[in-house]
Length: 113
Image 1 (cartoon, rainbow, N blue to C red):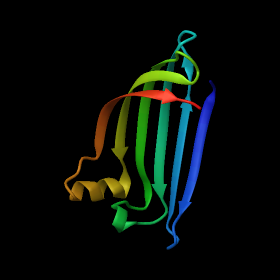
Image 2 (image 1 turned 180 degrees about the vertical axis):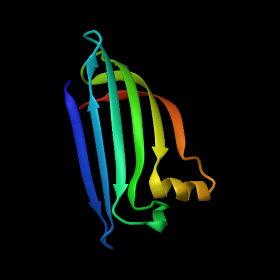
Image 3 (image 1 turned 135 degrees about the horizontal axis):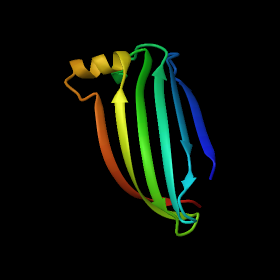
Image 4 (image 1 turned 90 degrees about the vertical axis):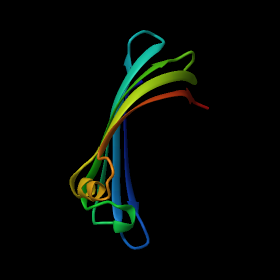
């Protein structure tokens, strides 16, 4: 129940580089109820037309999860997530007639083995 940070670097066979980072932290409301805000970022080192992404910071995702832990291994949750594309990727999506931002509500169950 601490801060969790994930950082990934992806390199394909053509030498294209993508970066993904995510930061999240758990806050205990009670011994069973937790709130988890998180932020995720994606960036690309070069334009990748086949993926409809441009070089630079491509997207940001902000989320807030509320979960009830029956045990540490089993916890149903509800979360709200706001996603937005940025920079050149946003321009590409607008040109393709796609939305550059969305907000979703997700329901699920978290299992840990």
